[in-house]
Length: 197
Image (cartoon, rainbow, N blue to C red; front, side, top):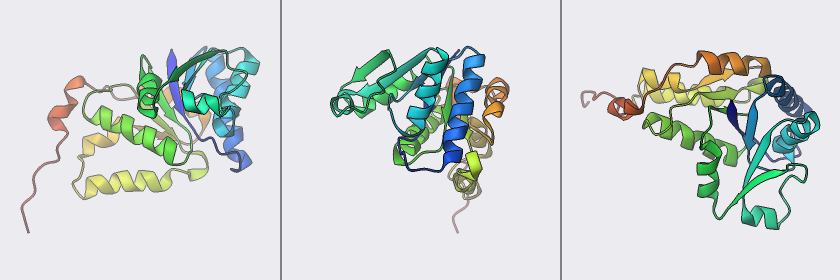
């Protein structure tokens, strides 16, 4: 199995996020999973790669060339794909993956997560999306997504495109139990019409 992991590059975040990233890496290594990630050496990306490399796991970094040029690439990762643009990086990150796992992160992580959710809504991506909600980090995001449904910007079925889990050991069961998503999802992507007030 190959999984793509979105995560933060910030090195100033609380230790609990690093602990969860390390635990996830150990957990995925036991399951003999190939990890694809953004290739960075700091923050949760760095913790993830540090742990996986130390354990001898199969890990692939994908990074734009300009980030390599400023030495952001993780020195311990042996397999890399360097792209010309950020958009190409995002395309490569999900190419051939079996699932997406989003760890806590800032705008870059959120952008990647929302893009893959949008692709899934359109039926252009059909794999499980698991959001690791360490310390309730994504509670407000979950509430916002539910609010999108309440206000008819999405439909109830769209809430099954992703799963929130609180602990790393819940990630793999969430992948296995994810609702099947089909390529014809675009047929129900537009919320129902409501009467004008």
